[in-house]
Image (cartoon, rainbow, N blue to C red):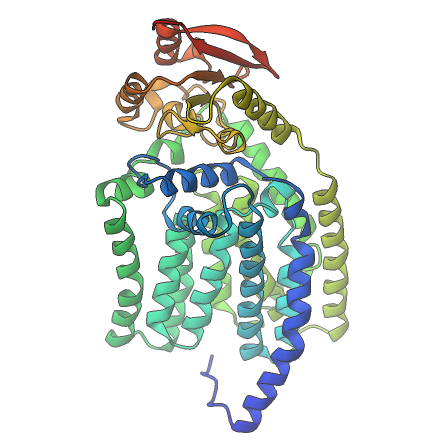
Length: 483
């Protein structure tokens, strides 16, 4: 691939006219495809986890110390900043920024495609990406979660590398990694472009100079040891323990693959055609898709939102393929993608609210039975209950998953105290002894991480709590007077 020539004044004016015509429809399409995201207070537990983290940080907490997660810090900080400006009562500001993230991704992909294959390809890439960006279960596609904010960073890394802006490309790779670890997979296609353009020492150093300081800075601003443990070294069991859950994991993988394939029905035929005739020459894009597929597969969890990482390279590969196919194929791909997008938007509009309604009922119970300053413990996988109720968690561990290895929906035998993240139970017991929760909700609802299978939790409840009823299958425990 040759570098683009310097633009003449005439071509610069033409470029401005191109973007003036393209940006408004892309912005409108980005807004339309994200309409369902504003119809619920939240879509999935990841949003709830981030909201609770942001509130704790706003009260002076420290990431990886007073609140922990297996994710890097960039998105909790974004939530915290938006809460500081707009308040923490709604995720609408975060959803608006997610629209901007999707629009930014589409614009960067359009620019990449235009540079390589011309104006029509730029329009095609931007439109196709936005149409397929909602092609998953709405809980995955419409949430303002990690993958949505990875995508503009990965697209920016490829855009900068395509223009040999190596320091900026490295910084974009770092931002992708600091949003979620799997975002760092874009480093592979960036290195591919570096190799294509000639891996000079200066270019390699600029790439490293852009990538390393942001990661080191994030570690130093938080807690270096905690950052390393929670984002890299402490997640071995989470990433590898699926013994006994093989069918569960396989079903999720096949289901989400089928859903995304349906959304990409307009893209996959030209991509398959291009693969057969091998005329696109887009080695870096194939590597981007392959690296993203590895990121989806890593850990064998296969949650739907993981698959969002595949959509930018798929949109570009389809655009590349359409350049060597008859022009009517492009219109067919767009029309098919429009129909699929409409179906997924309708799904988002009318999707059932089962788990959200459950969390809202628990939050209402917390609000009625506790005072605003009370700390509570929700033993389950729905941290959003704390945010919906406006109550502070009694522990830094916002879900039972970190204490039992149930995280990821594993239903096999490797669930229990001995499979918890190393060192969590002594800290958990100390926190609850220092400030006992006013109310405990066992929200395991028959899951393998309930008190019957977790001796530590069972002893805690027996020592100072008594059962006080049930709400929607969750068991309530209140402190025994004098305990």
